[in-house]
Length: 250
Image (cartoon, rainbow, N blue to C red; front, side, top):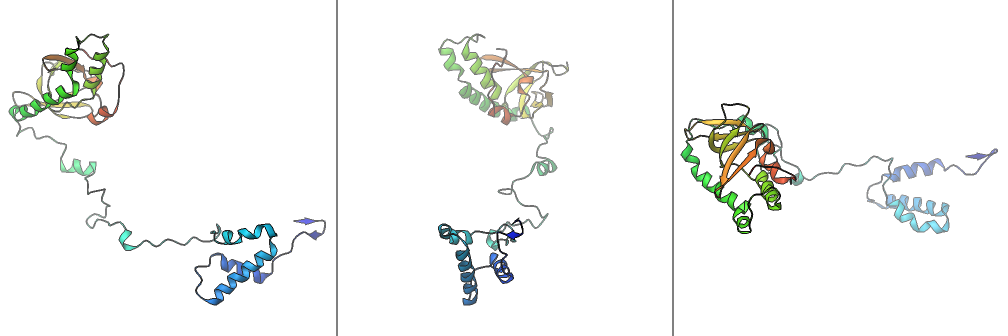
């Protein structure tokens, strides 16, 4: 910056510029010569700065410079992540299988040949106990609940029915777009987002779509009927959400 023909500042000597550039990225001092260079640079700054700013010299000199190249941090061998030898893939957590690996191993497939209806009767008994404890219908009945639509307790039970796990439930298909499925009865042995897989009393395994279907079941001598459209989610996702104004048929 110039005013007229005279400068309001003087350029630093080239020796000072070289010294300062070499000191900007200087590592920890190891000998007396390097310490003397640093001391000379500090003395130069003190001679140029006003008296009130000299207290901040040490603090500013300890800071890093943005224009200098940042040194890479060396990671010790113990802190490096181990890479799998077989396929070069990094393990996830405690060597959990990915979704692709589960599909390749066929873990999602159900063998329809070696299963009988009687094998899943104990699971159905467990589901009855599970649903009884979760819904607490006996408590509502003692309190005078009769299943009316205007009763707030009905909304509570409906919301719980929407969120429970249906694996092991004995259901009957009462409505469906496909007339072949109407009247099918069986125990649910697998649930996906779009379907129920159930085993029938004749040991046949059938896959029933949820959409546009209606399923009926009994809990503590009380019959319930629920639309498959209300169950069009994975059971884990349903359990996390709270739904309001849900209408089921009691």
